[in-house]
Length: 91
Image (cartoon, rainbow, N blue to C red):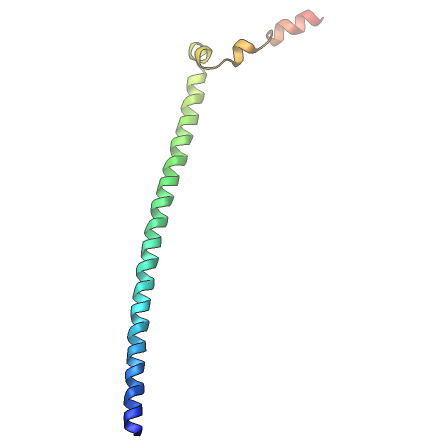
């Protein structure tokens, strides 16, 4: 009887070792999948940030031109008298 119970216990250990190995392999695949997803999301976010940064720089360069700024921005049209004229009228 002892030999049979040892044999059965050994078989259970082998099965649990096999199950453990399958679980580790499944965990590794899941980690690889999440790692790839993380890399993909990071790349997309990096590209979005770089694109927005380039657009900000380009818009600032474009707004330095008086002719273009006049058509793109209403702020100058709504401003009052230039500072020099205001200071002369106050004195």
